[in-house]
Length: 168
Image (tube, rainbow, N blue to C red; front, side):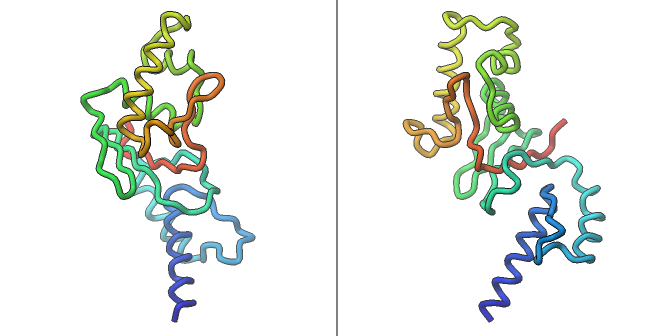
């Protein structure tokens, strides 16, 4: 009975990953069967507004959900983070989640529209913005795991899968 439950759970997880955009390995003994492929072919056109960023080949874990229409972050087991009132924080979060890592110049370009980065003028605003964003999304803002500081700018946790819905 336990083996049957385990098999059903892994099959369901495999189907869910495929619906979220992961491409199953045809050499995998537990790959999707013909019926799964047909169901996915019918279901994907019904959900064109969803895409996944992050490592699709990482071991299964609950994903974060970014609702672009409502500008809300949903994290497993946590209260939703509403960012509609703070479009700058939303822009920084969504771009980092999609890109994985951005240098300071690229982040300034997408968030503020600044074309030329200057450390004396721009580093403080970047640091303040990241501190505010970490305060909203990190479990422990003093020891950030998701929004990392890199040698060139900032990065998003590489092992975290993010589902983007309702993108324009």
